[in-house]
Amino acid sequence: MDIDFLGGPQPQRGVGVVAPFDFALDRELWRWVPDGVSLHLTRTPYVPVEVSLDLARLVSEHQTLREAVRALIAVEPQVIAYACTSGSFVGGTTGERAMCEAMSRAGETQAGDLPSVTTSGALIEALGELGARRIALVTPYTESVTRSLEEYLAEAGIVVTGREFLGLTRHIWKVPYRDVVDMARQAVVGAADCLFISCTNLPTYDVIPQLEAELRMPVISANQVTMWSALRKLGARAVGPYQQLMMATGPRLPTVLPQSPAAVPEALARGQVFAQGEIFAPDEVFPQALAPFPDVLPPAAGPAALPPTLQDPPPLPEQEGPK
Image (cartoon, rainbow, N blue to C red):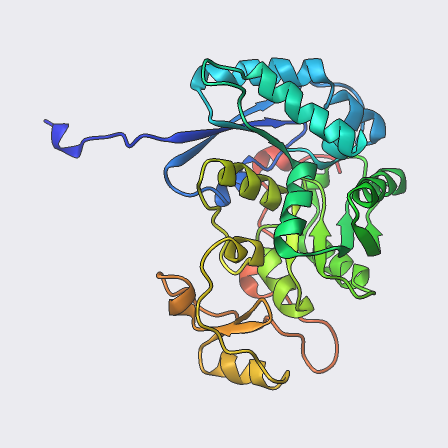
């Protein structure tokens, strides 16, 4: 059979991703990636250390980063993304910038240094995009690692108004959505501009729209800001339905501001969507006319229930095993 008429394959732009050896959420990263862009992942070497500040330092050593980038450049990525929050904040803002410089130099070509981003650097970039200076914070880390993140944010002029953490040192990718939502509700205790959910090994894609609608503020996560920032350097837009950071980088559509909380359920009844503190018609926001969330708002008493689409997915076979 002659298949010449099919043409292709279509050219792809590449994002090289350096992740820690225990990173388990490759598929979640891909969910933010539009057609025309490919991810090329590599991992740092295994070390027998649980999640801690010591591990963060080990997986962010410059020699480790240089070797990881060299393993990627054969497939010619156009940007490098270091996908680890703790590994990129453990050295403070100065350490984060030095990591980017080390990766860029390791990927140097005739065209110059390869653009590089880290999760923690992308976090500061995203907060600037949203105009957020006071944030609520959720992490799966121990208290010492969470405190180190707060110190990094303070260096960048960001105030943490409330925080919640799980104290985990392993198997972070197994945390269910329900635990993330519960922590978020508890962390938002002050006048925050935004909620940040830390750790690239913590699943967050599906909970972001639910929390934004319930908490009435932008919600960003480690994997989200990493992909958003890396794709920006390619001139591409990350894909994230009903996620305010994704919508903040594009043209705004005509909206109707709700004058009172009563306006929101009325809009939902008309088939519109509440997001970013505003009301949108689904077919105006997304050409595919995604269905509105019927349960995004909390009931009169008690917390909101997660819609069926946000229930925790069954574990993959490779994720089974001792907790």
